[in-house]
Amino acid sequence: MSKTQTIQWKPFSKKHSEYIANALNNKMNVAEGAIRSGKTIDHCIIAAMYLELCPDKIHLASGSTIGNAKLNIGACNGFGLENLFRGRCKWGKFKDNEALYLYTQTGEKIVIFAGGAKADSYKRILGNSYGLWIATEINEHYDCDDSRSSFIKVAFGRQVAAQKPLVLWDLNPCNPGHRIYTDYIDNYLNGYVGGYQYQHFTIADNYSITDQRRAEIQSQYVIGSIWYRRDILGERCIAEGLVYPRYEEALCEPVNHDFSDFVISIDYGTQNAFAALLWAFYGGVWYCIKEYYYSGRSTGVQKTNTEYINDIVKVFNDEIQKKLSYGDLMPIIVDPSAIAFITDLKKYKQHSVFKPKGADNDVANGIQNTDKAMYLGKIKIFKTCVNVINELQGYSWQPNAADDVPIKANDHAMDSMRYFVQTMKIANPKYQYSNYLVR
Image (cartoon, rainbow, N blue to C red; front, side):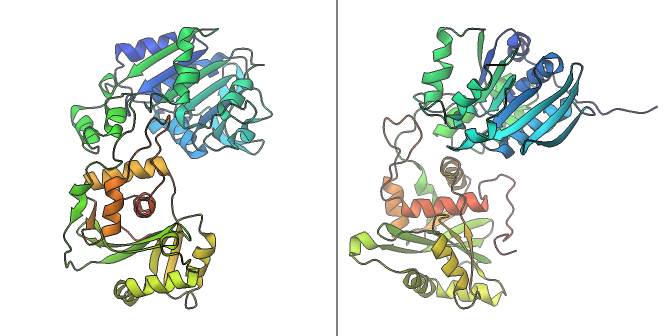
C-alpha cells in the first residue's frame, strides 16, 4: 500500500476558523497582527479554496521581493500553495515571471510571483488580468498617488476584467499614519463594494505555537521597543525618540581579548562624513574597537579615494596585518552606492589586501536588527569610539512622519554600524560566525 504525505494541521482558533469561513463571501480580506499569528497560513488556505473552483486562469502573489513572496506564499513553512497542491503543481516561467502552475478541478491555473517594493515593480505585473491577488507584507509594497506606477493601484487595476476577483492582504502593524491604513485598510471599513473583511490576530490566536516557543520568540525583542509592540503585541505605534534607546548597554571599556577575526564597515562620504568602523570577534560577540571618521564639510578639505584608503591602512594597520597573517584578505563592508571606492579597494596593492563587499542597505530591517543585536549582546562598542557614541546619543526618529524614518543628520557611523549588522546577519537567532565575506 502506498502512502501519501499529508500536512500535519494543528487546531484552529475560533477567530481563524471564522476568518477563513467568511473569506470567499468578501472580495477583500485583510489580516493584520503579530508575527507567527497564522495570518499567511489562513490566506494560503483561502487562496487554495478559491483557486480550485474560480473561473479566472491567471493570478498574482506578491511580497516585498519575489523571494519573499515565494517563501511566504509558495512555501509558508510547509503550508503554502506548493504544499496544498502537492502532486498537482509545478514551478516554471510565465512571460519571464516566476510562476506556480496548478492543476485544479476547473483546469490549469497560473500564479505569478512578483516583488512589489520598488518604484518600478509595477512593470513586472503589466499585461495580465488577475483573478486572485494575494499579498504578504502589503505595507512594504510601493504606493504613490500615480495610478500608473503605484504597485498597489496597478495590481487593483489588473483585476478589473476578472470574472471573480479576490484580494487577500496580510501585514504586521506599522506606523498608524501609514497610507496603507489611511488610503486603504481603514478607509475600506466605511464601505467596500463586494464585501470587506478585516481581522486582527496575535500570537495567542495561533494554537500551533507552544508557550515555550512563544517565550523564545519574545526573548529576541527589546521589551517596550516599537518592534516588540508591533511584532509581538500586534499594535500599531509611532516610532519616536531615540532609535536605539538602550544603546548604553552595548558600550564597554576597551578589553585586550585575543580577537580571532576582523571586519571593517564603511559609510562613504566626500562632503558628508566618511565613517569606517573596525569590528573584532571574540567569544560570540563582535566588538567595535576602532573608528576612523572624517568630514570634508567640517574641515573644508575633500579627500580622494586613495587618501581614504591610506588613512584606513594607517589607523587599522595592526589588525589588517594580523588578518593578512592568517592568509586572508581584510573584509570590508561598504556603502553599496560607493562603486568607485569599492573598485579602488579591490585594486589596492594588486588586490592583495582588501576584500570589499557592497552592504545590505535595507534600512528598516537593518535598524531593527541592529537594535536586536545590541539587546542580545551580540555587538559591543568600545567607549573609545567617541564618534559612534556621539551619534548614538542623538540618533532619533523623525517626528510626525507617516513612515519609520530616522532624522538624516549625523548618522554616518550609524549607517556603517547598520551595514555591518545587516550584511553579516548578526541578529539572526541561528547566527553562527563564519567569515563568508572571505570564503
